[in-house]
Image (tube, rainbow, N blue to C red; front, side, top):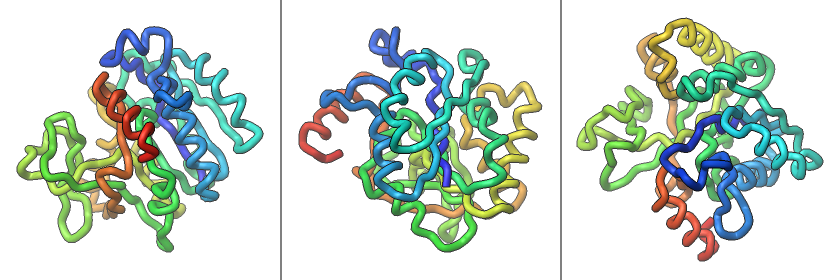
Length: 247
């Protein structure tokens, strides 16, 4: 199984920390980075055979960073030349050619997970398109919210009203089975042909699939099993949790 990490963005909301550093390489206070932790979790899970990292902003920094891990697991950089004028749907498009042969996981590059998350989301014995979610008491406007019906996703969007949300998308998806790999690949190729999709989040793929009557399953993890860094307070919170060995 492959792991595709989306790490092309400029991280403008974290300036000046990201002025010379990609968001995925921000120091988490213990000398590690988001990217290093995702790579280490992939190796320790014993489920991932190869990692593809989609880069853009300051790609050379990530290329230099991963050299130390390439003796542990094969890692390949895929560069998104449109990173500064597009959203991450186009980053995922850069990986469409590797989606045919092997099952894969897609992860946002600004996420951090506890070590059991990769094994948990892959502990399934059927072909699936599976969205990882958590549940909270309250959902913020910026959360990628999810609505569900009988355990299946009916919509995933930041535009879902907080009171209507049933869960939050973690930004972590499992694609398993030849038919599902082909569905995802073809949907990406179809969507990037339309200029209006240039600013779409990659999770919009699943709304398109739902419209086509394709089932999207869910795997639920705990609210404290993961974190993401979008704003400066997120960094401080993650650093505090790491100092308490929560990650």
